[in-house]
Image (cartoon, rainbow, N blue to C red; front, side, top):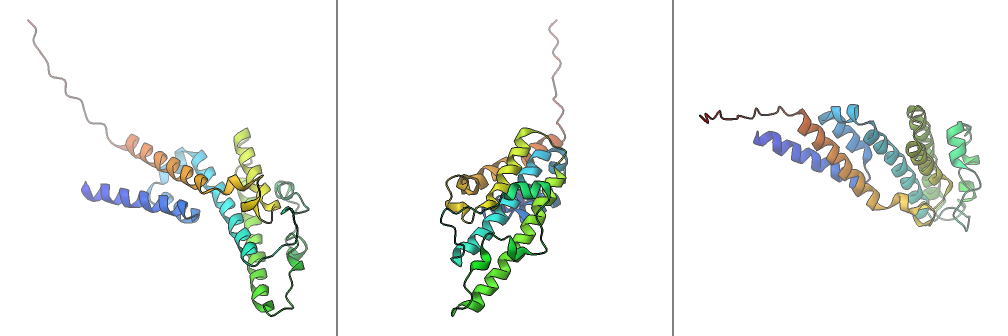
Length: 212
């Protein structure tokens, strides 16, 4: 019994730390491996994790741009509606350099051209993975017409329209570390709730009294 409790505590801590680090893939894998019933019974928490994974991918792309001092729009906003492109699946991936929000304006003729070129390739690769994942979760949850679900998807997709979403007042709150904390706590509660309900209930012994 002690080993089981210790294992559960360690696994819950691993899952929590993964989310707090932005590593949603690991959190999804650990939860699916150790607590598979949670996702079967709670599709909402599964959706939120998938949505968060998408947001973390966008965040990672924005960090690549920021570290390389890329982009040329002073207002931090792209000239296309990324959400509409995603939902309608009209975004073409055959020519990524034509739709990466000004990445081709990056100067690769200077002394840092080779390293900038590598960063450019990394970003293009991540952008394509992010777009494909966004399309996948959009299709997976197309049946869910709840306003909260569709709004969450829209908010996530909208981040793609910003070169620097972390510092863009309109959307920065979606990337706040507090969002990770809330999700980690909610997933922990879902796991513990499922564990509690799956435990066998002890029989309550009621002594019989003779009041005669």
